[in-house]
Amino acid sequence: MFKSSIKKAVLLRNIKVTLFCLMIATLVATAFFLLSHSTANMAIIYVLAIVFIAQNTEGYVPGIAASLFSILFINVVFTYPYMALNFTLDGYPVTFLGMMIISSITSTLTTHLKEQTRILNERDHMLMEAEKEKMRANLLRAVSHDLRTPLTGIMGAASSYLEQGSLMSEPDKIFLVEAIADDAQWLLHMVENLLSVTRINDETASVKTVLEPLEEVISSALQRFYKRMPHVKVHVDIPGALIMIPMDAMLIEQVLINLLENAVFHSGSSLPIHLAVTIDKDLALFHVRDYGSGIDPDTLSHLFDGYTPTQNHSSDSHKGMGIGLSICKTIILAHHGQISARNHGDGAEIMFTLPLGEQTYESEIESCDH
Image (cartoon, rainbow, N blue to C red):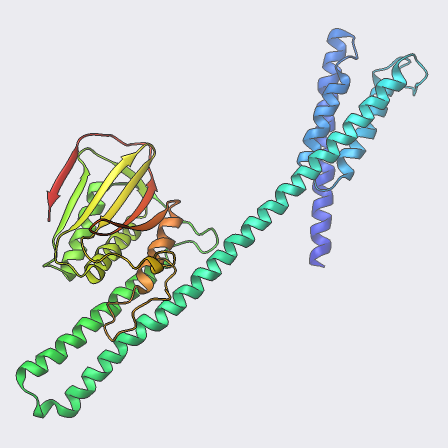
């Protein structure tokens, strides 16, 4: 029943489009004929109408039917003797045969190209769905590992405190409570990451963006970062003038926090982290650089998949690459940007790009330490 309704709707639309285009072509052809008393442009007018019909209808029938109608209509209305079929006049059979061939080929090619475009769009949609499914699977693997480890730590510390609390010294009790608080904070961070993904439209894998000032987004991200890691130093380089970038500010802040925390946990260094933003034509380039041990080359190709073959499965929940970088990739791709990682001479660097908005003003680079 549903398919029958769709077919009827398509048929009705084909008829409406075909009749409308032929009516417009006839009006234009009549105007030309009355003004010039010449039939030289009639074929061209109707061929254009046939092309438009083929582009805006489903299947081959409307275009071919319009071709036959156009030939007969020109012969009857615009060819002497008027209001009568006459294919015997010198030159007319060749003209009408040529118009029929051109119109039919044009209609067929146009319909074929439209069908090819539809197939390519469906293929792109399937590839996008496959990529989304792969990302979901990677996120699930990351969650299964990154949630299990801190939960195990919390349960173990809580059990030790409950069972042996009366026998422990005060420093030991404080150590267990701090371990519970630390793992709980990490769990909260991962939940924030997962909630961030829910802001991305599942159908189009995109986000609603508005122009945001770069400096305010960086400042807000750093404030949230310092609440968790007040003793970490970050060196910031950003353009001094107003830079407006279309983005979902909360999601980009989450990306920056993830990358900064990742630099702290994996660099193995107490040196300051370098956060820089540069402008290159129509892109804003974000760089988060640490000065530590770098990234295992075997891990680089899987770094943003949410689960890597060389992932550290130690009891420290902070050591796994985990879910954070996978969510960073999801967010940046939803903003039509790119994200990548590399090792430089003294550590690791993660870079991502965002397309710029219209209101962008360049100036000297402004540096500061936080």
